[in-house]
Length: 143
Image 1: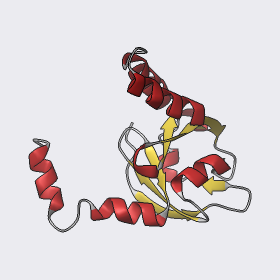
Image 2: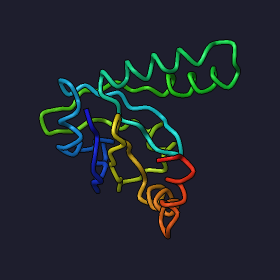
Image 3: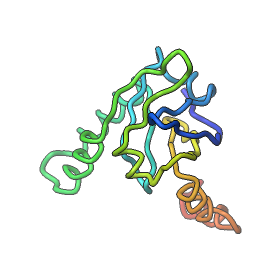
Image 4: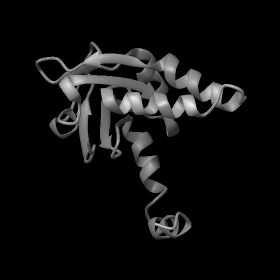
């Protein structure tokens, strides 16, 4: 499984988004789970990816307040959907509002999941690694 690429799309008036074919290919049986995610984007998980995320979240432990907060945010915002015959999923209003998405979106791969960004949010994220910062980050992470 490998979610890769960057795609520019739009959300229609009913909140539907065409899932790029490269991303769609990673969704077993067209099943998808959308959640609020880090840095103001919406994560797009395959069924298997969602199950892996659930296991990881459960390992955080229930006694830690911060862990409970992350679990609540992700679990409460989870929206399960299925890709329709036209290759679309519904991006609910609460997730669009969280990510600042109006009509235009950027769908990106993040290896084990996809991400849906507002164009401004994606541009801000890209600025973090441009202008030589990628080399610096790679050194800090021992990449």
